[in-house]
Amino acid sequence: MELKRIDNGQAFDFGKTAAAYAAYRDIYPQELYDLLRSFGVASDGTAWLDLGTGTGVLPGNLYNRNASITGVDISEEQIRFARWKADKNGWNINYIVSPAESTGLPDHWFDAITAAQCFWYFDREKMRAEIRRLLKPGGVFIKIVMDWDLSDPIAARSIGIVKEFNPDWTGGKGVGSDIFDDLFPGRRTDAFYAESPFTREKWHGRMCACRGTLASMDGETFRKWEQAHLRFLDRCPEQFTVRHKICYSFFTVE
Image 1 (cartoon, rainbow, N blue to C red):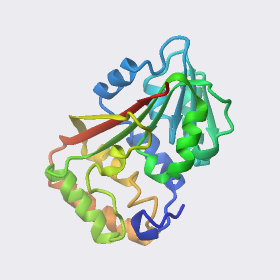
Image 2 (tube, one colour):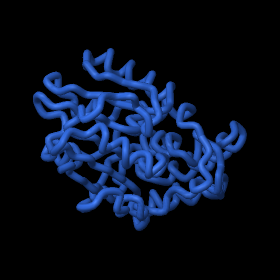
Image 3 (spheres, one colour):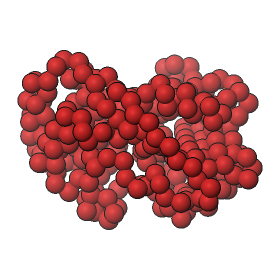
Image 4 (cartoon, rainbow, N blue to C red):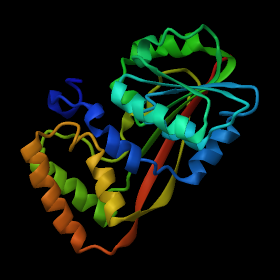
Protein backbone atom coordinates (compact mmCIF):
# COMPACT_ATOMS: atom_id res chain seq x y z
CA MET A 1 0.00 0.00 0.00
CA GLU A 2 1.18 3.52 -0.73
CA LEU A 3 -0.57 6.65 0.55
CA LYS A 4 0.94 10.08 -0.02
CA ARG A 5 -0.40 11.37 3.31
CA ILE A 6 1.40 8.62 5.26
CA ASP A 7 5.19 8.24 5.64
CA ASN A 8 5.87 10.69 2.80
CA GLY A 9 4.37 8.19 0.36
CA GLN A 10 6.61 5.31 1.44
CA ALA A 11 5.11 1.92 0.52
CA PHE A 12 4.17 -0.48 3.31
CA ASP A 13 2.62 -3.93 3.50
CA PHE A 14 1.08 -5.17 6.74
CA GLY A 15 1.03 -8.66 5.24
CA LYS A 16 4.76 -8.78 6.00
CA THR A 17 4.01 -8.18 9.67
CA ALA A 18 1.18 -10.73 9.97
CA ALA A 19 3.09 -13.31 12.04
CA ALA A 20 4.51 -10.65 14.39
CA TYR A 21 1.14 -8.93 14.54
CA ALA A 22 -0.61 -12.15 15.54
CA ALA A 23 2.00 -12.88 18.21
CA TYR A 24 2.60 -9.44 19.71
CA ARG A 25 -0.17 -6.92 18.96
CA ASP A 26 -2.76 -8.25 21.38
CA ILE A 27 -2.09 -5.38 23.79
CA TYR A 28 -5.37 -3.50 24.25
CA PRO A 29 -6.20 -2.98 27.95
CA GLN A 30 -9.20 -4.58 29.61
CA GLU A 31 -10.67 -1.10 30.09
CA LEU A 32 -11.15 -0.85 26.32
CA TYR A 33 -13.01 -4.14 26.09
CA ASP A 34 -15.21 -3.11 29.02
CA LEU A 35 -15.92 0.17 27.22
CA LEU A 36 -16.88 -1.57 23.98
CA ARG A 37 -19.18 -3.93 25.85
CA SER A 38 -20.86 -0.89 27.42
CA PHE A 39 -21.70 0.24 23.87
CA GLY A 40 -23.32 -3.15 23.22
CA VAL A 41 -20.54 -4.47 21.01
CA ALA A 42 -20.87 -8.27 20.63
CA SER A 43 -23.83 -8.47 22.99
CA ASP A 44 -26.33 -11.31 22.63
CA GLY A 45 -28.41 -11.19 19.46
CA THR A 46 -26.46 -8.35 17.82
CA ALA A 47 -24.35 -8.10 14.67
CA TRP A 48 -20.92 -6.46 14.91
CA LEU A 49 -18.44 -5.53 12.17
CA ASP A 50 -14.77 -4.84 12.92
CA LEU A 51 -13.12 -2.84 10.12
CA GLY A 52 -9.37 -3.18 9.58
CA THR A 53 -9.51 -6.22 11.85
CA GLY A 54 -5.94 -7.37 11.13
CA THR A 55 -5.37 -10.68 12.89
CA GLY A 56 -8.69 -10.40 14.72
CA VAL A 57 -7.55 -8.96 18.06
CA LEU A 58 -10.84 -7.24 18.91
CA PRO A 59 -13.14 -10.08 17.75
CA GLY A 60 -11.08 -12.65 19.63
CA ASN A 61 -11.14 -10.74 22.91
CA LEU A 62 -14.83 -9.85 22.66
CA TYR A 63 -16.02 -13.16 21.22
CA ASN A 64 -19.60 -14.11 22.08
CA ARG A 65 -21.13 -17.17 20.43
CA ASN A 66 -24.54 -15.51 20.72
CA ALA A 67 -23.50 -12.56 18.56
CA SER A 68 -22.84 -12.39 14.81
CA ILE A 69 -19.25 -11.17 14.37
CA THR A 70 -17.55 -10.16 11.12
CA GLY A 71 -14.01 -8.90 10.61
CA VAL A 72 -12.79 -7.22 7.42
CA ASP A 73 -9.23 -6.49 6.33
CA ILE A 74 -7.54 -5.81 3.00
CA SER A 75 -4.55 -8.05 3.88
CA GLU A 76 -4.95 -11.71 2.97
CA GLU A 77 -2.03 -12.63 5.23
CA GLN A 78 -3.54 -10.91 8.26
CA ILE A 79 -6.92 -12.54 7.68
CA ARG A 80 -5.22 -15.92 7.33
CA PHE A 81 -3.88 -15.57 10.87
CA ALA A 82 -7.27 -14.33 12.12
CA ARG A 83 -8.99 -17.39 10.65
CA TRP A 84 -6.34 -19.72 12.08
CA LYS A 85 -6.84 -18.24 15.54
CA ALA A 86 -10.63 -18.55 15.25
CA ASP A 87 -10.41 -22.18 14.10
CA LYS A 88 -7.97 -23.01 16.91
CA ASN A 89 -10.35 -21.62 19.54
CA GLY A 90 -13.61 -22.79 17.99
CA TRP A 91 -14.86 -19.24 17.40
CA ASN A 92 -17.56 -18.68 14.80
CA ILE A 93 -16.25 -15.42 13.32
CA ASN A 94 -16.73 -14.48 9.67
CA TYR A 95 -13.47 -13.02 8.35
CA ILE A 96 -13.47 -11.35 4.92
CA VAL A 97 -10.62 -10.04 2.75
CA SER A 98 -11.94 -6.76 1.41
CA PRO A 99 -11.29 -3.02 1.33
CA ALA A 100 -13.19 -1.37 4.16
CA GLU A 101 -14.72 1.12 1.72
CA SER A 102 -16.55 -1.56 -0.28
CA THR A 103 -17.31 -4.59 1.88
CA GLY A 104 -20.26 -5.88 -0.15
CA LEU A 105 -22.04 -6.68 3.12
CA PRO A 106 -25.82 -6.17 3.45
CA ASP A 107 -27.43 -2.78 3.98
CA HIS A 108 -28.38 -1.82 7.56
CA TRP A 109 -27.19 -5.14 8.96
CA PHE A 110 -24.94 -4.20 11.86
CA ASP A 111 -25.74 -2.95 15.34
CA ALA A 112 -22.12 -1.86 15.90
CA ILE A 113 -19.08 -1.12 13.74
CA THR A 114 -15.58 -0.63 15.15
CA ALA A 115 -12.37 0.64 13.55
CA ALA A 116 -9.25 0.41 15.72
CA GLN A 117 -5.81 1.68 14.68
CA CYS A 118 -6.77 1.83 11.02
CA PHE A 119 -9.10 4.65 10.01
CA TRP A 120 -6.34 6.90 8.62
CA TYR A 121 -5.68 4.27 5.93
CA PHE A 122 -9.23 4.52 4.57
CA ASP A 123 -10.86 6.91 2.12
CA ARG A 124 -12.72 9.13 4.53
CA GLU A 125 -15.60 10.15 2.27
CA LYS A 126 -16.22 6.63 1.01
CA MET A 127 -16.18 5.36 4.58
CA ARG A 128 -18.77 7.92 5.62
CA ALA A 129 -21.22 6.47 3.10
CA GLU A 130 -20.27 2.83 3.75
CA ILE A 131 -20.69 3.09 7.52
CA ARG A 132 -24.09 4.73 7.15
CA ARG A 133 -25.10 2.04 4.67
CA LEU A 134 -24.04 -0.82 6.92
CA LEU A 135 -25.38 0.38 10.29
CA LYS A 136 -28.93 -0.26 11.43
CA PRO A 137 -30.94 2.71 12.71
CA GLY A 138 -29.73 3.19 16.27
CA GLY A 139 -26.44 1.45 15.46
CA VAL A 140 -23.14 2.79 16.76
CA PHE A 141 -19.79 3.42 15.04
CA ILE A 142 -16.74 3.51 17.33
CA LYS A 143 -13.31 4.67 16.18
CA ILE A 144 -10.34 3.77 18.41
CA VAL A 145 -6.74 5.00 18.49
CA MET A 146 -4.23 3.62 20.99
CA ASP A 147 -0.80 5.19 20.89
CA TRP A 148 2.31 5.51 23.01
CA ASP A 149 2.49 8.28 25.53
CA LEU A 150 5.54 10.14 24.24
CA SER A 151 6.67 10.92 27.78
CA ASP A 152 7.33 7.19 28.31
CA PRO A 153 11.14 6.75 28.09
CA ILE A 154 11.14 3.24 26.59
CA ALA A 155 8.56 4.15 23.95
CA ALA A 156 10.37 7.38 23.11
CA ARG A 157 13.73 5.65 22.62
CA SER A 158 12.24 2.82 20.57
CA ILE A 159 10.50 5.33 18.31
CA GLY A 160 13.77 7.20 17.92
CA ILE A 161 15.62 4.05 16.87
CA VAL A 162 13.01 3.30 14.19
CA LYS A 163 13.36 6.83 12.85
CA GLU A 164 17.15 6.49 12.69
CA PHE A 165 16.71 3.72 10.13
CA ASN A 166 13.42 4.86 8.56
CA PRO A 167 13.21 8.67 8.64
CA ASP A 168 10.11 8.68 6.43
CA TRP A 169 8.08 6.89 9.09
CA THR A 170 5.52 9.34 10.47
CA GLY A 171 4.33 7.08 13.28
CA GLY A 172 5.22 7.61 16.90
CA LYS A 173 3.82 11.13 17.10
CA GLY A 174 1.15 10.34 19.63
CA VAL A 175 -2.59 10.36 19.02
CA GLY A 176 -3.27 12.69 16.11
CA SER A 177 -6.24 14.70 14.92
CA ASP A 178 -7.82 11.73 13.13
CA ILE A 179 -9.78 10.74 16.21
CA PHE A 180 -11.25 14.24 16.52
CA ASP A 181 -12.51 14.68 12.95
CA ASP A 182 -16.17 15.42 12.36
CA LEU A 183 -16.87 12.42 10.16
CA PHE A 184 -20.42 12.43 11.48
CA PRO A 185 -22.41 15.19 13.20
CA GLY A 186 -22.88 14.53 16.88
CA ARG A 187 -19.60 12.65 17.20
CA ARG A 188 -18.47 12.40 20.83
CA THR A 189 -14.88 11.79 21.90
CA ASP A 190 -13.12 10.75 25.08
CA ALA A 191 -9.79 9.28 26.19
CA PHE A 192 -8.06 7.43 29.00
CA TYR A 193 -4.56 6.18 29.86
CA ALA A 194 -3.34 2.68 30.58
CA GLU A 195 -0.03 1.11 31.63
CA SER A 196 0.53 -1.85 29.31
CA PRO A 197 2.82 -4.64 30.59
CA PHE A 198 5.63 -5.93 28.38
CA THR A 199 8.65 -8.15 28.47
CA ARG A 200 11.65 -7.27 26.34
CA GLU A 201 10.62 -9.91 23.81
CA LYS A 202 7.01 -8.74 23.65
CA TRP A 203 7.98 -5.09 23.25
CA HIS A 204 10.47 -5.90 20.51
CA GLY A 205 7.81 -7.97 18.77
CA ARG A 206 5.33 -5.14 19.07
CA MET A 207 7.86 -2.80 17.43
CA CYS A 208 8.48 -5.36 14.68
CA ALA A 209 4.75 -5.29 13.96
CA CYS A 210 4.57 -1.54 13.43
CA ARG A 211 4.36 0.14 10.04
CA GLY A 212 7.83 1.64 10.31
CA THR A 213 9.77 -1.64 10.54
CA LEU A 214 8.77 -4.98 9.00
CA ALA A 215 5.98 -3.45 6.92
CA SER A 216 8.28 -1.03 5.09
CA MET A 217 11.99 -1.79 5.63
CA ASP A 218 14.06 -3.88 3.23
CA GLY A 219 15.73 -6.92 4.74
CA GLU A 220 19.13 -5.36 5.39
CA THR A 221 17.68 -2.22 6.98
CA PHE A 222 15.40 -4.29 9.17
CA ARG A 223 18.35 -6.42 10.32
CA LYS A 224 20.33 -3.31 11.33
CA TRP A 225 17.33 -1.76 13.10
CA GLU A 226 16.66 -5.01 14.96
CA GLN A 227 20.24 -5.24 16.20
CA ALA A 228 20.13 -1.64 17.43
CA HIS A 229 16.76 -2.09 19.13
CA LEU A 230 17.81 -5.30 20.87
CA ARG A 231 20.98 -3.60 22.15
CA PHE A 232 18.80 -0.89 23.67
CA LEU A 233 16.46 -3.45 25.25
CA ASP A 234 19.42 -5.26 26.82
CA ARG A 235 19.75 -2.21 29.07
CA CYS A 236 16.06 -2.26 30.04
CA PRO A 237 14.43 -4.33 32.80
CA GLU A 238 13.16 -7.74 31.73
CA GLN A 239 9.62 -6.63 32.54
CA PHE A 240 8.23 -3.10 32.34
CA THR A 241 5.13 -1.13 31.42
CA VAL A 242 4.61 1.36 28.60
CA ARG A 243 2.09 4.13 29.11
CA HIS A 244 -0.49 4.42 26.34
CA LYS A 245 -3.25 6.87 25.55
CA ILE A 246 -6.47 5.36 24.23
CA CYS A 247 -8.79 7.75 22.42
CA TYR A 248 -12.19 6.85 21.07
CA SER A 249 -15.00 8.62 19.27
CA PHE A 250 -18.50 7.31 18.72
CA PHE A 251 -21.55 8.15 16.69
CA THR A 252 -25.06 6.71 16.81
CA VAL A 253 -27.22 6.56 13.68
CA GLU A 254 -30.64 8.08 14.27
